[in-house]
Image (cartoon, rainbow, N blue to C red; front, side, top):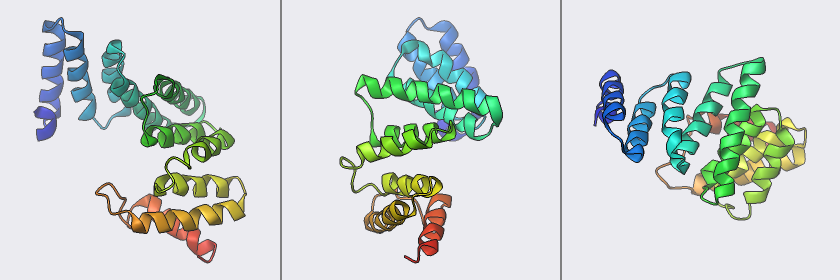
Length: 194
């Protein structure tokens, strides 16, 4: 409830109280997840999620993978590499469990990219492309990554396909045209004369 109202400190206080008083590890993990969901601080999010990890659930691993990727984006050098490697580790655990989503695979490719593994990031997305052929995000990241890798013909094809899929996408989760990703995709399309 506090997480929905935006009262971060009250959420933290209640999560701590529940964790201290309850012997139910699943309930403790849910409290820690709620606390992690209301903070924008990557390290604080990781601290809460690390506590929740004791439950070993996929949702917790997904949260940790995402938090470490977020931390990696804000770091440089060895700290960036370390955070990206932790994110990759959690995504590998999620994928090996068999309970992964297309968002997990996209985020896994992003963590690989953050860790300087551009070829592996491309490979992950190319592997899931047949299954998620209508997801503009898969094609969009393939356009970004293949362009970065210097494969302009592939980048152009993925860019055009991503824009077409994005325009067809009517889901509420579709990124708006003003988003950073779509602006980057449109700029790439302009570069290729699409």
